[in-house]
Length: 518
Image 1 (tube, rainbow, N blue to C red):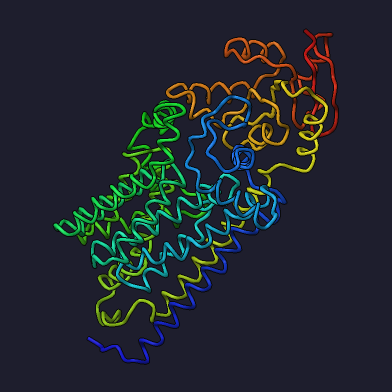
Image 2 (image 1 turned 180 degrees about the vertical axis):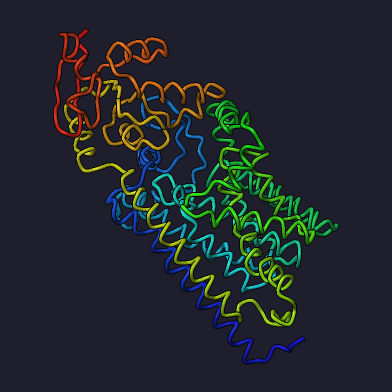
């Protein structure tokens, strides 16, 4: 076997710096470019805008409810992102919307470095971690939910989860005071950032203990971190409980898609990708097979566990081990495959994978492919944001309708979670919108998905009778009916114009607003 010289080690260091630096640069471009082009936060974030502004009105005391949509929605969401945005806005005189727009891509770009640190610990190789970071940074669509306006909480949750797992692993391995303190800090921030990620972080820490730390010292440290985290986070959840009891948390727990098929979810995670070429699916599968063959079960189980624990956000959590498995597919499985079929003489065992020209060429091609696919996906995200015309409509509503008005918005989008108009309307127009879903996870419990389906169905209504029947069936009356981006040939508009029950009070290419004459 060949020995590794000092010159080769230097070359490896340079290779890692080059790969990781380029990954960070293009990962940042992929995250910031759609946000820059949109000119407004992508997709969601309207409820979070209201919650940030609520902290100003309450002088930083945790409110009982949020003003969003006038529904008395419990202010039960983990508040770290809202408090940070409030502080930054007050200190630096930056608008809340600007922070909702730019903080998510900034934090998610930093998470590339956090992921690289965790991958190094689990793969025990800086070069393999650099390869895994390519997939983390550039996989098409993987960062989408983290750079949207709602990524104000999701991006922090992801960053702190990665940092928590890194330092818990170090705590298990080394057991020092620094490791204990930072493990506690990042676990605390994770719980205070996002409700679902806190659950997945706890599960990930238990999995790390099971595989790497079943010792008395590691077990004791684990109990200390868990107990101290719960103690330090208690002022938040005890305040929420004092306002509302356990109802908001019990309601939110019932929105985790637990009735979905585990096998279908796992199949989708492995084989359903965003690109035209199934590179991701092939590498995920190859990496999983390789890890199992080498009895490296941790990454495989980590990819499966989120789908059992909390299916709703499982794909974003399983993405972390998937990236590491894809790195193993390239750095270990593929060389072993070629060595088996071409012979050891043609494929020296002692040569590191990063020293092989064909590996570097292949990584370059994958890098370029992922960046192009990711850019195409990013361009699609740009269109899922409020336009200036949309904001003008909401401004008119705020200035020209009674403050207690109830609106019924028809946008034609049958996915409430990716409909920026209905999500931002209550925050910018400051009026209740009956077709908005956001916030109901804290109110409806097991009825949440029934409401989700109902809101999707009503967007397909082609007559005012359909809208009125839906409103009566769901007990959601309204004073104004708003049709976004109206098509002159829409049957719904014809039915609204056919009688005297509805009066047209606003008309632009962006929206038609009808007042219900009672």
